[in-house]
Image (cartoon, rainbow, N blue to C red; front, side, top):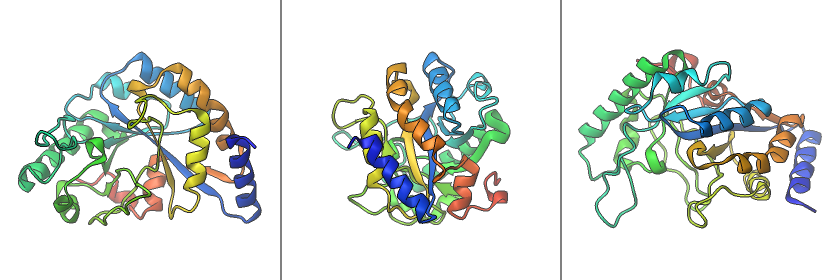
Length: 255
């Protein structure tokens, strides 16, 4: 049985059990419009998916925001400039504990302010740390930067530590960063969703449009079509996904 058929069987069982699978989509590193962004938006649009674009506030342009018109997409705060501040030899990180806490909080507030300025109503107060890494000393005080939620990557090997704000993490990464550095095959997308069947809350799928070509989106389309057409799947908008983890509507655009 193919991975797609196995996923279809899983969805059939969930439908029979009245257990719909809630999914949401995050795409990282939005700054400027590009051909890659257009291909991403086209593919997601064909599948009826409204994505959360983690936008880099320091480089985000009004033209990139305008490219999202008519898509139902939203913007999350993706750090400030996606700059690595980690010491040599350590994993890349922009908001790690090696920087003063006050400086990082101020930068988060600055990024959120700029996202609201450029993104307008699309801007939602969810913080996405670059490289999905964040100093644990920031977790209890994230709300002080105007943030209402945190979105990183939930690894099955290590539970994500709690934060002072709700977590809306991604679970399925469509880039094989530790291997080929390229987009994963469609079969892998199906297999990874199956692996996360028991996740408590919505399952997040993570893409990076800047390193994804049309061929990858074409390869993923049969799986996306299955997920969009199956009655046991609920695709959540970014706002609805935040609501599922307890972020009240008034806090999504908190000042």
